Image (cartoon, rainbow, N blue to C red; front, side, top):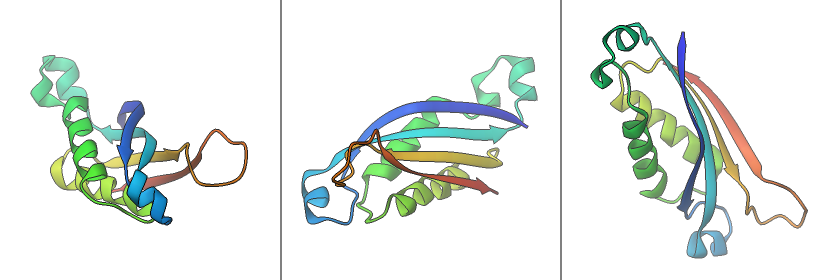
Length: 119
């Protein structure tokens, strides 16, 4: 199975359990791998024979920012669901959703959730 990777996609959204997270928003970082057969694209050199990462980013941005979720688990699942719905060639998704500004009194790089989903 072939893979396309999007790493370090930065988005601003209003996800979180606390009121200030919902009101002020914060930055999130998404790392995403999506798996699909790429033989046709390798042969044809035609963007129509792949699932364009530009289209995937557009989908992620829309889904991730169109509503607020309490949990990053739910936000990550919404992204997976939407990608499977829009792109029938995607067979598997691995997404890591990072929350570098999580309201935790500690010194850390980020809190994150990783989901692995297969169609």
